[in-house]
Length: 283
Image (cartoon, rainbow, N blue to C red; front, side):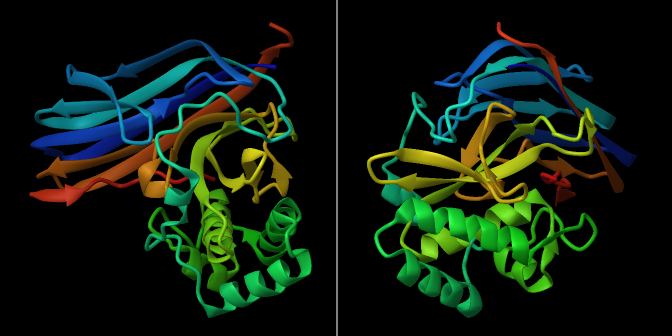
């Protein structure tokens, strides 16, 4: 399908910040099942914009600017997708799968999570794909979607104990559990065409990819309890949210900071003083 995407992030500082640096991972790449037909990044201020690829191969823009009261970063374009049954092919892989067994503070399993994994692994034995499907269902049934109790720095353990969160939290719990079961897993940020017809969204989307021998990387969207389809647009990957966040940055000076995110995903046709800036999270 053909998906038109617009993703806008606005920061407002009161009083004005004396300077800021923003790292942007908002540009999708092309691979089997996903072709980027059009894409552009616009910035509201007269800023320097440098493009490069990070260690994971994500297209990254770095913005540096001086004094400012507000900043809006807009990424928009057209992406053509095809359903690959959740299997990722043709992507630029910079690391061996075993690298994604590495735990992070956001994706470490606690004893309760590890116990669930042991039980599921015992039931599935050598069926890795079956284990992952069951794990995704367990995460989906354990959690209740709720935007209030978690934030961009909430860990898998914290969200698991709360039993509530957004898609970022679902992905972190799935990743932590998969790694606890000896299966490489990673965080993916992107966009999702909702099945309920809602075009306007309050944030981007997030899911996980897990590595299955003889099959490769497969996408698991635990928040929707489905493997990834042509409704998913893959943008960036990382060990956890911090490595794939759409915008992360640091500001100097300034007072109160306000963050506003607007996302629009629609189908357009078939066929063809230094402080950390607020981080948006995936819903």
